[in-house]
Image 1 (tube, rainbow, N blue to C red):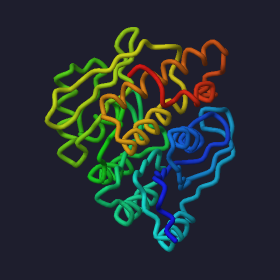
Image 2 (tube, helix red, strand yellow; image 1 turned 90 degrees about the horizontal axis):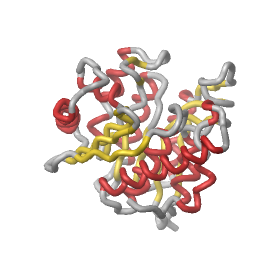
Image 3 (tube, rainbow, N blue to C red; image 1 turned 45 degrees about the vertical axis):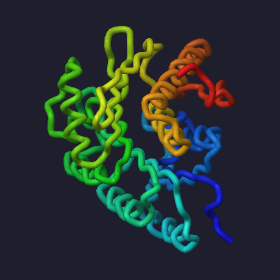
Length: 279
């Protein structure tokens, strides 16, 4: 009997027990969008690193054996979503996974979580960032922020890059593989822009009003919706509008509840509505 009658997405990311980020975000969102979410943990956190203290276990040494069991089951994935990777070894494991499980009908979304505000995250080295760029060729959809797009293309970061300059970034990235790219979270005054690029089409900017401070896990909500929509056959620009409008609605509710910044966004409040919306 085949295990592949239901559509499913493999998600490679860390597991964080509290703080609404990574796999803990992807599992409910992808499931609510009527797809099976199959997680591969890269590490286990009690709560994310934005808190003063946390418990942490590296899962790198177990990932190959974990994946081998999926190979024995002959699993097929309609989508693959990758998030934060903590080492060059993990990057190599993910590359092997993609070589094994990415088929012609598998949509791969790479979220190259490496840095923000023009700098790499403290846990990221330039060598690891270079390793991450080797995964880009597998991507059908790429979801970097501006910092990550600059790092991946070897471009000097400027917060005030023009639309023409961002288009050039996307064209460079697209030459490596992905034909659909969204540069997320561009701060433009009181708005947050998402720059949507599809090879052969004019870029489109999706705007939402900025609500409160940046919060952990917002990018994971965004990439999970993008991946699920792609597998569900939603047009790319509509998917970006969907993810953006959903996050904006959740952020407004998060501010109403006065949740600490570390606690992420309260997407659970609208999870049953995630397939609805004017987008």
